[in-house]
Length: 180
Image 1 (tube, one colour):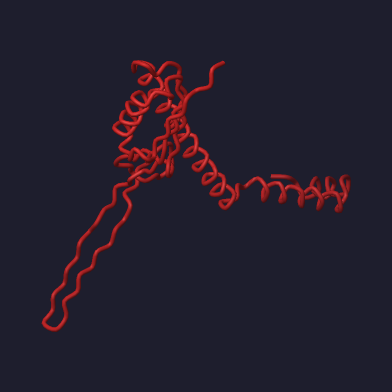
Image 2: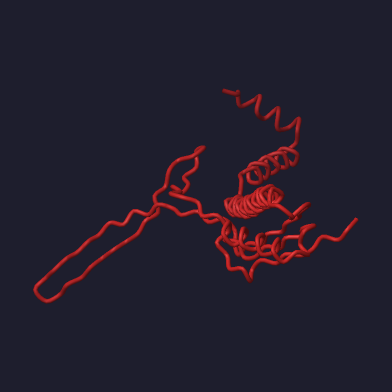
């Protein structure tokens, strides 16, 4: 423990004003170094949104590559470029715990059902338990192909795209690629 005379000597040497200033700065540093829960929640939400968009973009890009690869193998198609649009982003289906409670009385009958999301711990955070992920639903497809001027090739492309993505044929447009 510091002696009373030493403490008075230190205070006189530094000065009471400087000592109070140092104390105030120390308190400010402690206050500002504590993370704000609002800020971290906003950052988490922004990160989730960005991850969702990246996930959807990756899915669309992968489907486009697979469709191009498949269409190149079809007779008469030639070079091909594809653009796919989707209705929404990927969706995660979470597990919900549904306790069921029923009480019957002579005069009243009530049924109570509460749903709670099942949480698991992942990297020190509690996150919902995801049962499955639903991929985005394809809204429409544009195919630009060298053989797009041939009606038979066009119909083959439309049929293939309709079957692969479970969409109606009117949501598929085939165009002839310009000669370069």
